[in-house]
Image (cartoon, rainbow, N blue to C red; front, side, top):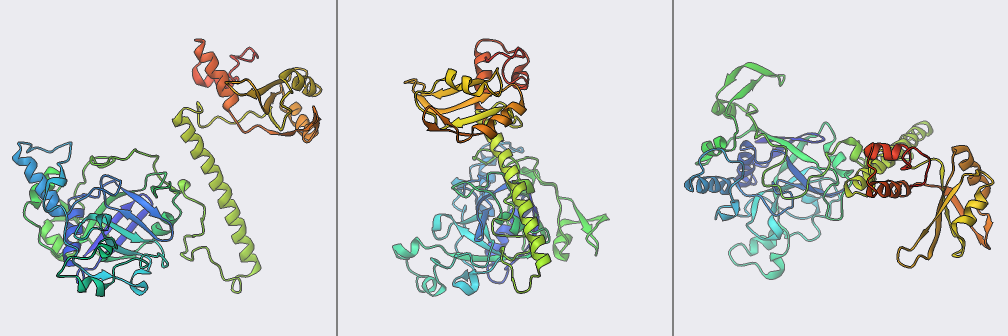
Length: 469
């Protein structure tokens, strides 16, 4: 009656609500036994509220019940594909793809506003579309009860068609609760950095879903399904301390006695059904440092009356350090993304320390004027005013390059807020590598590719001769 979820951030133990939702619990147990969740994405995270998972497609539109999965396998077999298949069969053709929305209905704040609830999901809030997807609540104030269909409404419409308003209201059916989270997985999910659709920028996956205890008989066709999916049928007994015993036991005996089953899982890094683009693999470095949540489960709130000054100072120092580390990780992530998009050649390249960024220029100031002004710090200073590619008009900012970092520092200290052509200019250290990148592109277009990107950037795109590209 329990499942162990091995995720990117650690393990979760789910205690299933067998009494309240027996058919739904049987479904998730059998899907876990068939390794249907192996390496599937946690595809939607709403920090402080919930996370969604269980869709092998990774976009919230896929998945099926265990009966639909068996049907799709049998249908594929009838078409002559009897061996283990690389491409999964089409589960949408099965009339048993979804289960009826029958089980313990959760409604109201008292039932829904709890962290660690495991809830069966209807697809698009359409009744009787329970498949493989489910959600786990990440906070007590998760707002799930705001628009939920109450149990009274559901019971009154049980034997008749629901009206249009009820049809669009979500129904949350109990699957169970998270009873063990020793590695603070839920707190880490709260700190996931997500895009506008709720998908984490770094892929968070269910590595495996293991059955700890299953009191239900297997449905017909289950044995063939396991063989087709490449799931082994051997299991190891577990002693009282949770360690593997040398004596293997029969699967049925394991199930009856409550031993965890650990058969071989399908060998793929992502489900073959997955349709969304692959992103970088998540780890602790891809999370917000706190984002209002911490691993102690206090949602970032502290009791100032109970916290002494030393503890408060230590906490603030830790938060500052975490935020600094998070900013560095974010800079690295953005650099990797720019490299993937082709906007920079190497994620590890750093902005040059001998280049100043100058802005608020007079539109009539030209390159020679700036070079003359900054030549007092370095006779070889080179200025490049950025211009509109169509009209050639000055965009009123420029980059000034010096031969040494010392000259660059001196110019920064003395030229910021200086008056140039009746304009108070602003000067700062350049944080951009685009100027160097353009130089490399020019050399590359001319056919000078000796040394590749690495050489082009080690010498600032000048080819080692000190020229300007």
